View 1 (tube, rainbow, N blue to C red):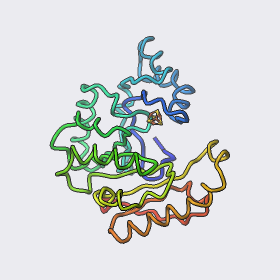
View 2 (cartoon, rainbow, N blue to C red; view 1 turned 90 degrees about the vertical axis):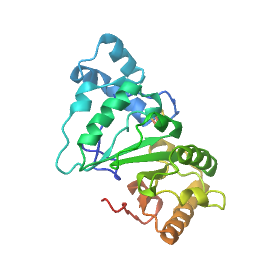
View 3 (tube, rainbow, N blue to C red; view 1 turned 30 degrees about the vertical axis):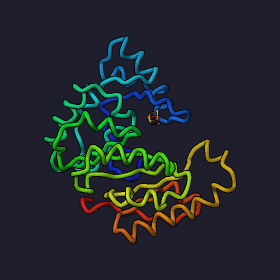
View 4 (cartoon, rainbow, N blue to C red; view 1 turned 180 degrees about the horizontal axis):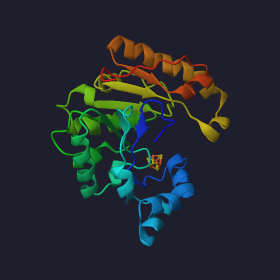
Length: 244
Ligand code: SF4
């Protein structure tokens, strides 16, 4: 499946649905438009179809079984869900496939890293775990949760997605956490929200990304600026970890 997410080759969504209820959720809107087609393709019952419509978590067997193309090496596993709400049996099935697909990398992203406590240990080496954060408070809180569970994992298995970034993330309090990640992704507000932004956001975004760029370059951490940054006048800087 082609994707507009520029830091991966493709998305693989064996589960749709998320209960975080973020106000501007693109995935929920997408599910609202396409749930019927997806329900048919996955042979869902009426009850499951209704769950899909309401964006409640549902396992999708046909999505799960889809074949990956030769060029699909970096795979984002949950652009339509958050593993926080996955059943244990879904996690086990997904990992059964991941360990068979040794030449691909599987990336998860969550707002609640305690979700990863349900993941197998030791973690397969082709799995990357990410946390998303938008400001220093959420970054510190989520990084503590993540590193509390994975303090022995090599940094190359952990990444952070700062999207949409809301302030300068590089501070004395955040640096000890940022230094532990193997990859940093950053992106701005997009879509309809962008139109509502204050002038200060437009002006500051460049400074915040530049501050991250300096930090990453000093620390030897690859930084990936999302393509949407260009419309804010930010020069793209798209680095991947060594596995790329
Ligand atoms: S965490 Fe992601 S998928 Fe879940 S409601 Fe928020 S934006 Fe949507």
